[in-house]
Amino acid sequence: MGLHRLFAVNLKKMSVPLSIPPIRWPLEAIWQAVEPNLAGFTCEVLPTVDSTNSELMRRFKTGQLEPTLLVAEQQTAGRGRLGRQWHGQRVDSLMFSLGMPLAPGDWSGLSLAIGVSLAETLDATNTPNQRIALKWPNDLWLVDDKTERKLGGILVETATFEGHRHVVVGVGINVRAFDIAGLADLGHSVTVNGTPAGIAPGYLQDLQSGADVASTLLRVVLPLVQCLQAFEQSGFAPFQARFAKRDVLAGRSIQLSDGSHGQAGGVTLAGALLMHTPAGMKETTSSEVSVRPCSD
Ligand code: BTN
Image (cartoon, rainbow, N blue to C red; front, side, top):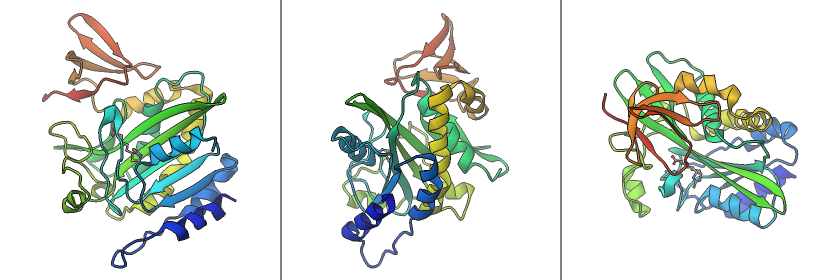
């Protein structure tokens, strides 16, 4: 049933300019891998939507509760954390949201756990001197000896409908270098993806030259579902050490957007950011705070 719906949507709404080859989304393979783990799972691709997160939240609020993977080839109002915009280009950027019922005892650390899942899945090739790191609370960074660049971001939103708890996990990954002119054509400014000052975007193709949006989607969805299910059972604690291995801030001087600064000291069992300050250890859980490393 999930697949029928998916193909119907594709045929009805696809209107891609003839010069641009269609993306061969591996929806059937994804559905076959995920559905046995997630009953009622459906997946869809939309050629354009304002935001895959917004669309799944709207659907959920009208009672569409089934687990859904929604992929967009283009977003007109992609959203990032803290009200930032998220820009993505067709073919160059992977943009999707996964909505599903979820009822963990404690939601703390969910975006960190998702980051661990994505980084471990995408970093499997062990490229020397280059790796995917995590920046608290929701960024994937591509790091090498000289540079650190933002590879992707995660936007987690939750809602309750008639007693059902639901999560929408939005993921944006820069797969290959953007056509900046294309963004301008869409009316976007050319600041890419709200990266902190001085942090240029990084691309998955820098790590794996053959990466494309379709194969990347196929790699990440099942591990992501399994991550959410593991988190529902056991919370963030089992992810803490895995996050620590990729924590790009640990031990560095950092500054929070609330003006405080200190030395990053890892994350707690609940995913809170620890910072050594002259006044003692400060714990930050606020989703309203952003953090950036100071130049070391
Ligand atoms: C961030 O870096 O602040 C999070 C970025 C999340 C972007 C993705 S793209 C797919 C999904 N739909 C959205 O509107 N946002 C997320």
